[in-house]
Length: 265
Image 1 (cartoon, rainbow, N blue to C red):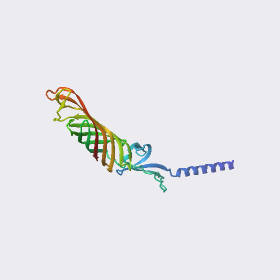
Image 2 (image 1 turned 60 degrees about the horizontal axis):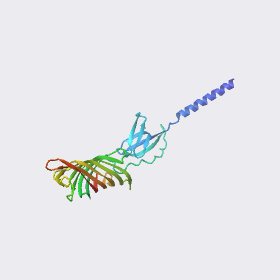
Image 3 (image 1 turned 180 degrees about the horizontal axis):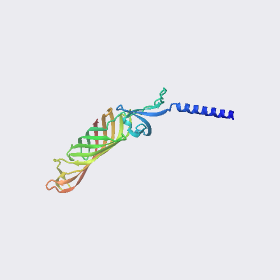
Image 4 (image 1 turned 120 degrees about the vertical axis):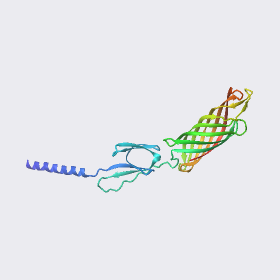
């Protein structure tokens, strides 16, 4: 009995020593340190990642989660911490590459247009647009003046909603190909009197539809500034009203192919 009691005591003694030894070992914990372009650093665990869009970071100390856009992130570093011990830092993961170009939220473009079809036009305009969260799409508002060059059509002022989406990019993100569309309202200033053969009377064009859509090629000269080159289809339409009594006599549309160059910043 005495020998058995000694064996049991020794067993318990070494069991307690083993438990204390395990409890004394440092608890290794891996965290993510997210460095922003602004200099801020957020620490936590990345629980969700949408490539090229955003990440979600769980912050245990604060008890919350943050959603961070990829373009605001400079780099992400994996950190392995061992409390009260000096251990070599774990190798950092390759940094998340931020967008090299067009990181601003807003962009302004000054536009020059030339083209022809039903009549020849030359135009000048300005557009302001905002980048969407996916960084590849933009929406905005534009105002343009189109002047007739051969007396076969009217002068017009177009107020349009603008949208574009980037299909591809290359050469360090400085080149891009997009599709775009401007859709809005054409206004026709005074002095656009035309002769309408159908009604055999002088007429003035009134408001109508404005549409310009096509392909856009982007060249970034600076990080947030560069050039657009647009190859597009341009259409504006109008109701026609007699000069003498403002009576509506019909509708008319003008269709053209237009080249547009823009400086954006």
